[in-house]
Amino acid sequence: MTLPLKSAEVGWSFCIPTVNGSEWQLAETLNSIFSEFSNPAEFEVIVIGSCLIDKLQEQLDPELIKQIQFLPFKEKNFSFNWKHFRRAFRKGQFQDVLMRSGWITRKKNVLAQCAKFENICLMHDYVSLKHGWRDGFRKYGFDWDVCVNTILNKNQTRHRDWLVWDYPEIGAALLPYGVGHLSQFMYISGTYFCVKKNFFLNNPLDETLYWGESEDVEWSMRVRKLIHFRFNPYSEVCYVKDKPLNEAPYCDEWKARALLLNEKLGLA
Image 1 (cartoon, rainbow, N blue to C red):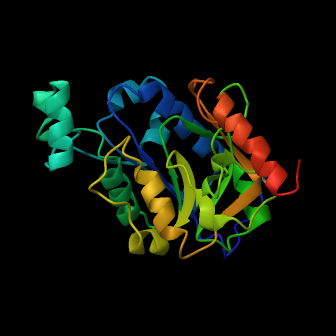
Image 2 (spheres, one colour):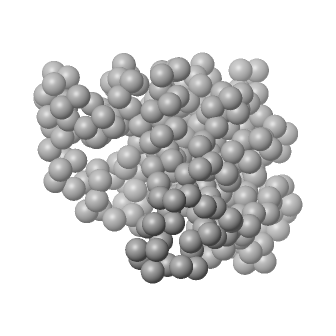
């Protein structure tokens, strides 16, 4: 049973950057959103990127597709800086010296500008809301500027959801969910997070950075000086595609740092 809309909730804008070729996973993401909401007046879905709508129609109810706002985006954009120029020249990638793809910061900033609700969920096109996500946020409340919840791999193991990035003498490590006082050392993954529209518009992503250039780290280190990150323990999301399980946070280095962090926090 879905709880009634509370005035503090105000509605949700789901903002999803995508690219051509990701339609199958995007369809799963979209279905998970529509499964959580029954009243179109209480949410919206905005997708930006070069996805093929005809391929999406093969996997998604046509009536649901009508409720989605699709924003076009040129996947290759002119961008020049000396650092990128030298890197591209060394690698022999001359075709990419001036035209670059993966402008994820611009995509997300545009999505936020187009959102009509104050509660924004920024999510990549392979993140699925688990059943009860919306009621979980209603239970937790809406007194936050930036909020995350459990992020699970496809095999249901925990991924990079609540973690420190530069904790003194340790560095990056997963945090226990119950620890909520270390925002000054934390990092919020750009894969999935919830943010208030006005806060994000006043603190946008740095558009000089592209995908893979730690754009989410830069943003986290900038905004954590202004607010405390919040964790909602009642909602979960899950990837619909496999992620490498031998990389962070499951590599030996990250595991060792997590153990050391727990010891420092008196939680070992």
